[in-house]
Length: 480
Ligand code: TRP
Image (tube, rainbow, N blue to C red; front, top):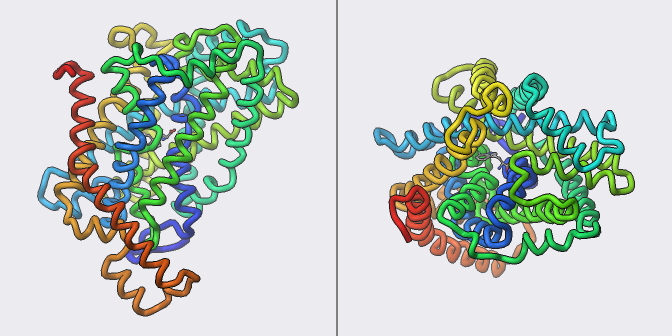
């Protein structure tokens, strides 16, 4: 295992870094949450706003987390404490830790459903089932209580096992090989979906914006989806970046990860909506069960559907795992570095707490059916609180921290990789052992500095103001 300068475990290869960050970002958020939120929020117009938010707000927040994490080389709470000692800033880390629990609770519910669908696929449980049967199979599972709880606990334990196997070995290894396969399967599913009779309406729904559907809560929902899907706003990427080596190019990593994340979400949309319209389902009626009610039908109508179905749910479960380890790691890194609890005990404590809260989430459709606020059950409330409240709040504070509190030289050093240490290494010469000429290098540096000024303008002004307005507008405190 690679040990960094301070004896901390760390990522080693460049490819490993992008894959681990992408592994965190790409998960149920893209394939499960994106289609159902788009369905509930009116389709194309939501998609456009979501894309704008990823570009204008998501990438800058991600980059800010990278800057904080790599410069402090601490967990989400410790990073604020180190950069801003004797201030209230570490509270941002506390918000992140709370958010991590809330997300882990409902995320593991859906990941558990995914594991059950691996099992159902293996036993060929959908053979000959009509669309109505597929829906019934899902609903009877969802409302059964014990089964979903069982799978959720399995998932939480799997996450813990990977966490305990260490940062580099665990995360890097699992992330990098498998995700390309998931993308290939999504492409195959999309092709099948768009060639089903009656599917065109689905593409129309996804890509033709109808702005009459846009309301203040829908806009907040787009922000929440962007933040959730990119894994930002609660310090998961602060924690990951604390394991990055000094030579990682933070800005290009944030672009690559965000673009991959968006493309996979859109691909999931192209696999789901055409199929849904072909089946005669309404986009807003799916809810959290959407993909589980739609995709088994698609599998049945494609050659090799059995194997595709098994592979798809296995890979989705793995995508969920590489995301949930990044969520759990926030808590484990905090407990072990700040409270000096051994990693093993820290993981155990986290597992027990997450399983406890998670139980309420999973039982939202059975034991706790009818418990909630308005139309929202416990599951919806956990998701809403994390995605639409805690993450935007965390993101807001993170950009203010980087834009206004941190020493601007530190931020610049992180973004340009031209900190003092790197200058020394550069002069010693081994950094120059690549095939770029001096001219290339000059261009490279200039480009990074341009990125810096655009970045600073966004994190100081655009992002804080935009996030604040979106949030206050949605809760009705201001009206625009
Ligand atoms: N982004 C992941 C997904 O799309 C979920 C996730 C992982 C996450 N880490 C996070 C969400 C941190 C918010 C914050 O499935």
